[in-house]
Length: 95
Image (cartoon, rainbow, N blue to C red; front, top):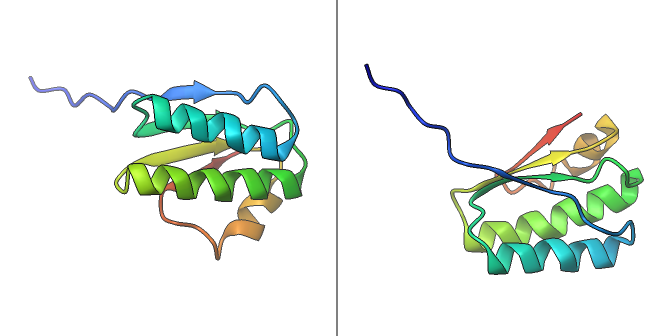
């Protein structure tokens, strides 16, 4: 019987609520580690900061892994709504 293994995902929680520092932290992680599929918890950020961080970091991730995926863990569906026209195709939002 064949089983399909799902790609391993890593979960990352930025150690700051400052959006610029969070972008730097996540982008450094993307540069250093193999993370084609990953999850990032930004549910502690406000809507605008979460939009900024997810857009900037998804762009960096897309450049390195065009076929990869980031699952953004958010606290409000407004983040998804605000970013729907900016999506690169590599981001999903999880409430």
